[in-house]
Structure formats: structure tokens, C-alpha cells
Length: 234
Image (tube, rainbow, N blue to C red; front, top):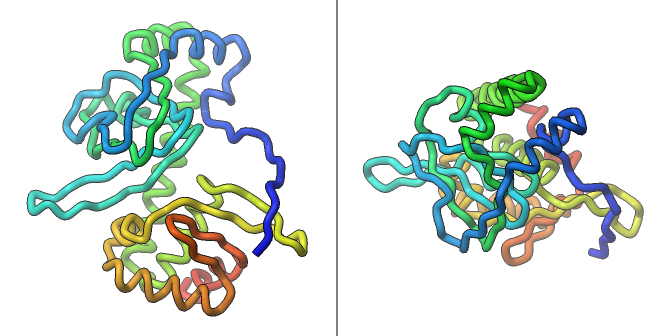
């Protein structure tokens, strides 16, 4: 299937929503660090040291049980910020952050962030909005996990992830489609399901022309159909 980039501008995060002067003050205090695939940015139980902003690459947030079972919260790309919630709560991290690919991450130390928060109350306003939106997302995710069947949960998660972290394109008929880099293992971990169950559903959707599968990439050819799958169970 032929697709073309839509030429959208860079995605924005909460830092970009700050007034110009405040935003620049934050950027002036951010340093850039590079991490390789498989390297930890922080681990569950660590005290927060500051906030991170993904500039390039992908970072996975996950947690492991005492038996070694991994649960993936999500895989995030630029310009997602990480550790904001732990900083606001001043509590240890509740998950691990691991680079899925070679990544560049901006880092603003906690001491500098707190100094800026004292001077510019707009920062706390944006952090409050961010935390509230994430709480809403968690409530919706919990609701989906408890009342929806796997097909609807997979449809909802794939659509949400693709529209948030994927690339928007137009197909040859000028329809809006999305491509997203994600492994089936990670999708299964996000949903608490087996890879075999996820693979079967994805194959069924591919046969129906809803998606297209290539190695490490999923193209949502008919994203609206995925929402319809979710709506049928609500």
C-alpha cells in the first residue's frame, strides 16, 4: 500500500505549552544524554532525580513481578516527558524505563526544576494538567481491562498508541492512515495477553484489510474500524 507523509509539524509536550520565557528558562537548564538499546534510564524504586524528555528513539515503561513476568505500560517516543509524576508526588518510580532503541533524552535535574517552579507557577499548572490527563488515561485503561474482551482492548490500545506515537500518512486515496513501530510481544504485555492471541487477531485484521503487518511495523489502513470494534462493547 502506497502512503505519503502528511508533513505535520513536530508534536508538542507540556513544556511547549509554557510561555516563551518560561519555556526557554527550562530549555536552558536541560542537558542531553544518550543511551543505548537495553540501557535503563531509571528503575522501579529509584528516587526521582529530575524529568526527562525523549528527543530521539523509544523508551519502554514496564514492571516485573517477583516471578519475572513483565508488564509493559507503554513504549514512548519524542516528545514524551518521563518522571513528571514521580517528581510531583516525590515518590519512588513505580516502573522501569528502558531504551528500546538508541535514544537521546533531555534531562532537567530536580534541583533546577524546583527552582524554576518557585519562580514560574505556570510550570505547576502544566504539570497538574499533565497528571490529570494521565490519571484519566489510567482510569480508561482499567475500565477497558476489566470489561472489554481482548479484541476490543487490542483495537483500542493499538489505535491510541498509533495516533499518539505513530506517524500519520495519507494513502493513495487521500485517506488518513497511521504507521507505528511496535512488537507483538510488547502489545501482548500491554494487554496482559499471550502473543499467540494477539497475533491471531492481528492476522484476522490484516486479512480483513484493516491493518498491514511488516516486521516491527503495523500500518493502520482503516483506523476508524478499530474504534468501531471498541464501540460495539461499550
